[in-house]
Amino acid sequence: MKKIILGFMVLCSSIFAGEITVAAAANVTYAMDKLVKEFNVANPDTKVIVTLSSSGKLVSQIENGAPFDIFMSADMKFPQALFDKKLTKTAPVIYAQGALAMLSSKELDYSKGINVLNDSSISKIAVANPKTAPYGAAAVEAIKNAKIGNGVESKFVFAESISQAVTYAITAADVGFIAKSSLYEGNMTKYKENKNWITVDPKLYTSIDQGIVIIDHSNSLVGLIKDNNKKEEVKAFYDFILGAKAKKIFEDYGYIVK
Image (cartoon, rainbow, N blue to C red; front, top):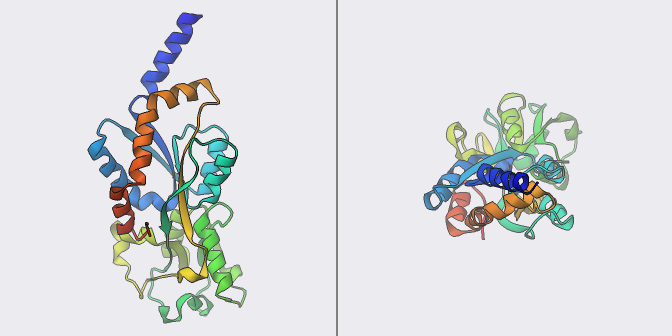
């Protein structure tokens, strides 16, 4: 029996060595490649595997035992919920503040600001599911605080995540609420500010404080072995995300960092 347990531990150590798993909110999609590349400059032997989805869906997976090492949420509420359930090793810390934008593949009269939603030409508005995507909740809050009427809610086309909302905004809808960070990558740069997109007035919605936590796996044998084997690598990535080099990348993608 001792030989079996020893063999199991050696196998687990071999499987998990040099590899960490990060669950990240969909809005981080666009900055993640650069973040990982910059991290690997100083940590070339650490493979970072990233899963991107809405924060709510990722929390559900973590609560059901998904083997993520780090959770980068689009808000503080979801990581706080994990912390309250003693599923994290660290309390939530803000790594960046997100910004909400409105995007259309066609040119709109953005001199009206968010009130452009009242135009008769706008029949479909892409919004990430506010129940699972904090940016979607911010969009709904902004519309409410702007006191836009005329049954604008009936125009909503709900996306599963903020990254899907970007796709909907330029394909299936007339305009959409998106993470501003998506506008700084690849083909998205062809869309021009004040013609195709604008930044939503941040006074219209609660600050999007994005939180990070280290997940605690110590409630299972495999998880405990994984934690012990990768503790330094996980902490290195966590510290990197909160450090100056990552902050510069976040700034380059339209986030606010302090």
